[in-house]
Length: 281
Ligand SMILES: Cc1cc2nc3c(=O)[nH]c(=O)nc-3n(C[C@H](O)[C@H](O)[C@H](O)COP(=O)(O)OP(=O)(O)OC[C@H]3O[C@@H](n4cnc5c(N)ncnc54)[C@H](O)[C@@H]3O)c2cc1C
Image 1: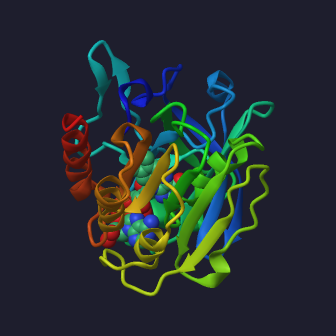
Image 2 (image 1 turned 120 degrees about the vertical axis):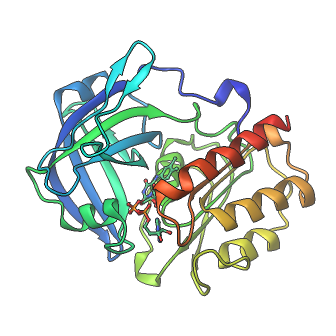
Image 3 (image 1 turned 180 degrees about the horizontal axis):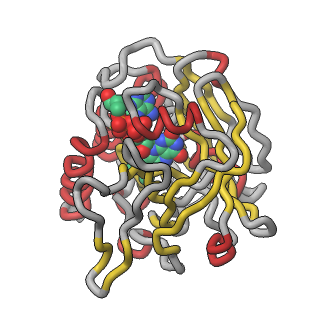
């Protein structure tokens, strides 16, 4: 999905560690912001906002998740009955002085363990954390950038917009489930946001986001960044490459989740999709 130099965050990562919730707030009706603290966070790179992280949730009957440990050949996981529920999220904000990270969770219902956890999170709760990972820098270039995503990508897009220099130009398209999930973002770059309210079911092939990006006729820019539901991301990736003629090395397109599939069932498919894209380079 990204060129070789940007495939991984070439910086130190934290081994799996336990963090404690210190604050929770509703950013909008369907987005919870959870602030997490723990001593090891001092080692995070200053500019890690927007980067991918792994979160480990306790299983039923556990108060604290049982974390994998770093062995000589990678992570060593606890046995199946103790293995934590693992999900990927983005760092919305890093407060190095505290140190603390803020993570924004889409509240999409209690059928998702991560969403259910975030909806009930309270100070004192404990969660596992590892990372950061993902491309570094998050965006290949800053001129005429195209950013597009649904609410799951809003934390990373927000962090990206806040990190861009005032000289950066482009446009952003963000699809939210309801109008009251729109957020007020403050940043210097000349990248106006078009907010779109969903009018299709998740997984549709004609989402408001797909229609808006297809209707966008601004000249092809230096970089495109797209994340969100699987079908939308794949449709937009195809559009950017085949219709708009973007250079595949300058686009980042990652399906974050798939309608009607929990992460355990979708994880492998996401990696196959991404590997096939990279193999086509
Ligand atoms: C690199 C990366 C970064 C990500 N960053 C963030 C982030 O910062 N914030 C964030 O909220 N999400 C983020 N996601 C998406 C998140 O990992 C998934 O939404 C994940 O499936 C949520 O886990 P869950 O336990 O709540 O639901 P699951 O158990 O995985 O799924 C249960 C059901 O909920 C549905 N579902 C899952 N996610 C959503 C959603 N967003 N909206 C509607 N229905 C959904 C599934 O289709 C399934 O039917 C990121 C994903 C990736 C790969």
